Image (cartoon, one colour):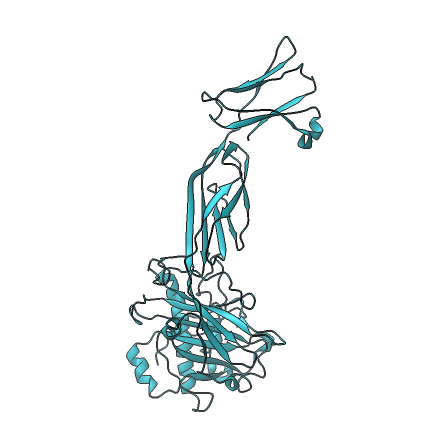
Length: 438
């Protein structure tokens, strides 16, 4: 068994097992109780911190395609392990138990149609029945690191299994990994974050979510463990390759379905219902032009499908990401033409609507004041933005002007850029005036 001593995790000297050829795997299968093939799903159990026990567990769940190819809405029982192998054989109870499922594609076309470095990874749901922010697809190179970490978990299980006697907790599909002999090759060594060991992100080589945060592949039960917990399984084909489920080449991973760990230690998998690519719908705003600083409230309407994030790009360097629908506000501090883009994402993919030069913010024009012999005041100006509506406001108390401005005139800047206002009565000498739009 060849090991790569060049890579270690978190400065703890944990060895990462090098990739073995398929021939080596088949040869080893005859001599070792635990066996696996690339593109199998790997289920891992562990407890961390003060809850850490004597064992961790690795389960081979079989080919990932078996789960992908299930009919929509189908629920199956996970039979590759027995609940008793986890509790009481490996752990004293099921509380504070962390578990994950992951897998990888080793070579292009194996399984058929899958590109190299495709990943499968679970993500805990924030609450029962509620999917979280989807994992995001990345380049083949970026996803390669996660593939190697997943392979190391499985290869580590093979090595540890070879050092144990064959019994009910050391089989072709299940291996109980004692810490006493694991020597840095156990499930947790490759799953844990080097700085935060209770987080399972494949040593920070795992996928990110759509907000750019590392996905915690593990779901951890609480005490008392009285309600089943669920984790969504995402298929993450490398960005740039078309996902046959959604037709997209990047964005959110495809939600295959979800695993559910029950309070008795058994587990099921439910294939997701058919999903559709979400539609971004349309974008409207309270105003589309005016003087800077221009405050604009944007609304998304007619969007459809399962959407878990709304990413607004206002064109002036400001980007807002929401996980719920709702109006958003942006202020354009300087003049210019701004393109507004909204991208919605969900389990079925993502969709974008882009409005070129949708917001036109103009520098605030200046008012020139002239008092007539009659005492009337004339306000005027030139070089304004043609066609923009403007209003003249007045107040006799500057200290209270924030709330006491009174509109006295509304018009549109002429095609030549001129604008103005002549008051209809003798001007109060303590009056103040301002020009606003709209």
